[in-house]
Length: 398
Image 1: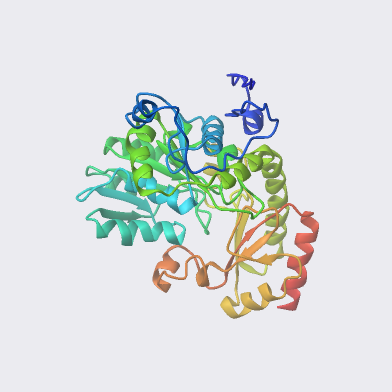
Image 2: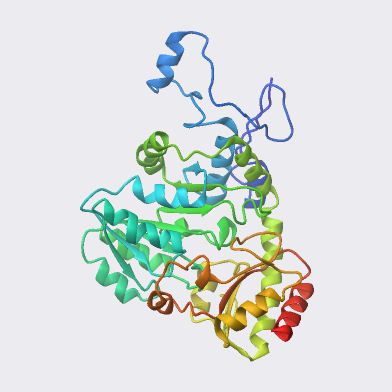
């Protein structure tokens, strides 16, 4: 008989990340099992009927639920402090599902302008095709939020810190305004992770992650998750996911479970390394701009310090020489890899204007402060002095 010890209410985040939500099979395995099955069998036909009528709680089909995926969902919900979590195949599937499950033609949605390119595409291109009106605001300007939320609104979507400009949005203030308009607040918390920022404690209703980033953290597989209260997850989100099918595979869920076990250790080192690199970049004096929420020069540093326990591993900076100079700089890298991913154990560098945000017009990129000289650096787990030395030699070579 398997032994499944109950979760202790006093367990802290790191303990929950290692043990939360574990369910052992009859074999009593130490490591979580991968239940690589598409379906499940019944002893008799009446049992199947009861399952499909929701009269009994059991697994029916892995598009709906799976033991390994459930462990990942439960563990994430415990770490986040949410009632429930619903996993998806990718982070973008989580973003889309979080909104699409609740909006309909005629609804109003408000989003912050500083968003990852695909998130902005959902708000400005996909949702309007289905009759949903979207208003985009400067997320750091509470007056714009107040104006946009003077009318009934179904949901609000924000990233904070934002990708790639690292804008910080006041979650509590925006949530207060949104709730007066009847809106649910969705926060993409991927840069902060569930360890550095707790949006629900600041008034948000729903939190989404690309688990592909820090939660896996080692560039192995894709995944996403939406977290919220019982009513939203079970009655609004669950039917949408069940019938549209963006399900997370059991293997990927297992990889994410393993990633969570070391998340606390990795995030602490990521933040330590990023501080070293941000300080180095700021002291160079020859860069047009250096952005890191942990720097006092960041325009929302005080807000970041209030709502985050640390400042993450992403640093952005702009080379005054523009795209041509930046490409020479990036091509001179010997240690740091050029990649559009982030949150990896390896340090990764990307040029947002020609990759993640290339669909935006030059005017839209300018409104985000995203110039042709900007690069986004996801600081990894290498010795930070080696990362610094690689940047130094690349600046010299360029």
